[in-house]
Length: 467
Ligand code: ADP
Ligand code: MG
Image (cartoon, rainbow, N blue to C red; front, side):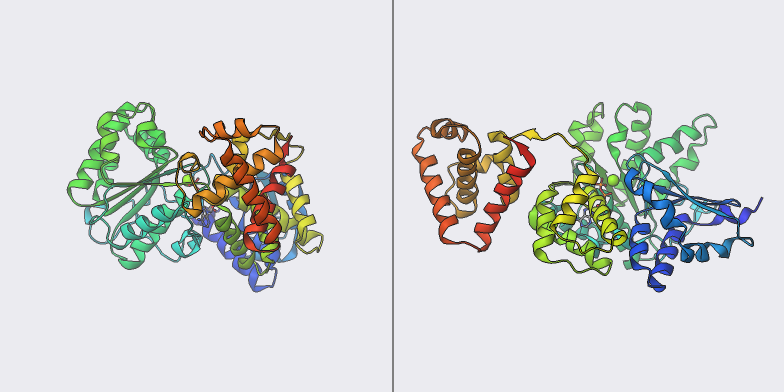
């Protein structure tokens, strides 16, 4: 057995491969491969993990690329090693890139009694992709972002604990890792541990039979503890007890605690009251779905990173159709990029439609309801439904309210009266007024930003829903 394979960091290896391909001007393949994982490297060859079936089906020819073989030949003294790909589920795996299991407490010199198992954190080693500068900030995440920056700047001082919550693929793990990277950059000696809650629980379960609690309690020696996906605490009473003590030990020593979950502490089923109140005692920040502008920037950044410039109009076209989480936007973009690179085609509207159709094959269209329209318009203008229903007359609320009323009238069979009561208004005059206003805006401002936005929203609703 060639032990050497056991010591290779597969995340770093993937990074090296991507750089290698870029240096050989294989930028498109580098981009596609950067979305893969290296699952295994052993005497026989290398296995890539791919989360997307469509991409998997096309990847085997890509992986036979001679430059990729050239890279791996460093590990083999014969030509017969195999390079292949398998489907993996990224979502259920621990987050990639900057992942450290609990054995890799990222230590500084401050905690000498933590010796033995720990490895020191090498800032150059993890994929620095999850850094602050790669995080696109918009109304959906600016509070979480600003708080995260603040925590990273002065850990243990101003915000403690810091709790981030929000749906899947919205950047929670990204922010956690960004904090870890930044703290380490500012203070290389501090010990920082990023760990998923699941890993922590598994480590704990392992030590129960041998009663080696001391081993587990080493994490009380870190300066910054970041625990991802704490919704996994649900129903784990025994572990909750341990975690409560860990929390207190760190907190009392002014050590920074950062937590992320897909829901609020109150919503985590079976979380003990005292943990709920601890988790809520600092700052809580939520992350929402990105609004249109943010999605456009995310798409532009993805393109730019891989040496493509795409027209703003095209980015917007895709952004409007991808009203989804960032993980999904990235996946669809990869799909489109893939199509463009294998067919040597420009990224245009047609290609985007094809990409979306292959990514979401024969999706059944949902029915267009007033709720859907109101919700979609609210999201596009970044106002809440409550604001839409309120009496507020500020322009940034009246416009979306008018647009929603107008579109409901245009695209559904609801009467003025019904629409008025749908917006909690007694008088349907306001709906008629809204219709006139928006109608005029569309007529008199052809081509300007507002007009285009409304037109795009309308197009989107018509195309994506059944009427
Ligand atoms: P979560 O942990 O909330 O499920 P992740 O942090 O894993 O989500 O994000 C999913 C993907 O989307 C990652 O590749 C991440 O880098 C990217 N991402 C999420 N939010 C942003 C953002 N605001 N700007 C740039 N990339 C983002
Ligand atoms: Mg995550």
